[in-house]
Length: 221
Ligand code: AMP
Image 1 (cartoon, helix red, strand yellow):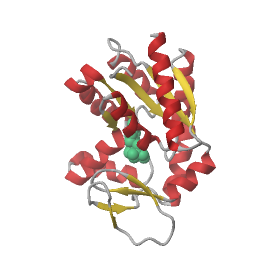
Image 2 (image 1 turned 135 degrees about the vertical axis):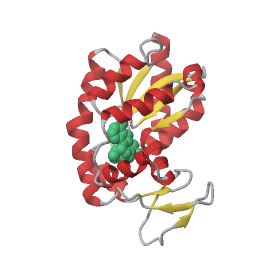
Image 3 (image 1 turned 90 degrees about the vertical axis):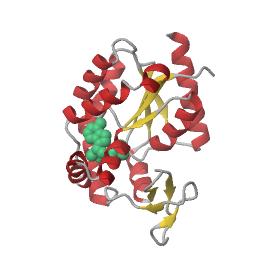
Image 4 (image 1 turned 180 degrees about the vertical axis):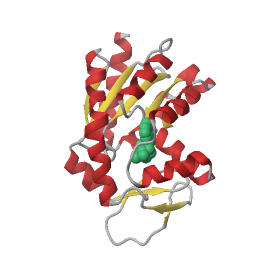
C-alpha cells in the first residue's frame, strides 16, 4: 500500500460512508474531510455559520454551494491535504460544487471518485437505527429500546440520535440526494473517474472493495 490519495466517497447518507471514510483515512494516512462534521462543529461552537447550518440541517436541506465551496477550498489548502491528499466525505453534493472542486484541484487532480452503492430501502432502515457519538463521531446501531444518551466506547462522550435522523428529515434528504447528488454520478462517469462499489455486505468486505478500487485507479494514473 502506498500512503497518500486524493479521493471522494459518494453515496446515499446511511450507506456506511462515514465509517468507511474513517477506515480509508487510516489506511491511506490522509485526512478525512467531512463537511457534515465541519458544520456540526460550527453548530457546537455557536458561530454564525453554525446557527445557519443548524436550521438547514434540521430540515434536511443543503447549505449553499458558495459557503460549502469556501469551506472546502480553505481545508484543501492546509499542508496535510496538499502533501498527502484527503478523503472527501459529503462533498461535493451538487454539480456546481463538483465543478468548483475541479478548479480547486486542477493542479493536483483526484485519483478516483468512489460511489458506495446501497439501495434506498436499506439506507432508510440503517439511518433510523443510527446513533452517533456527539464528541468523536463514532457511529453505533440501535437495536431498539436503548436509553439515550449512552456512553461512547471510544471516547466516553454521549451517544445520541442525530437531530436530522427523524423519518421526515431522512426522507427529505434521500429525495434531495436523488435530485441533486445523483447527477454527480453522471458528471464523474463522463470523464471516467467514477468507480461504483457495491456497498452491501460485511463492512470488512466493502472496505476491501474500496481499497482495491483505489489501488487500481492509482496504478492506471
Ligand atoms: P452529513 O454529515 O454529510 O450527512 O451532512 C449533514 C448535513 O450537513 C446535510 O444534510 C446538509 O444539510 C449539510 N451538508 C453537509 N455537506 C454539505 C454539502 N457539501 N453541501 C450542502 N450541504 C451540506
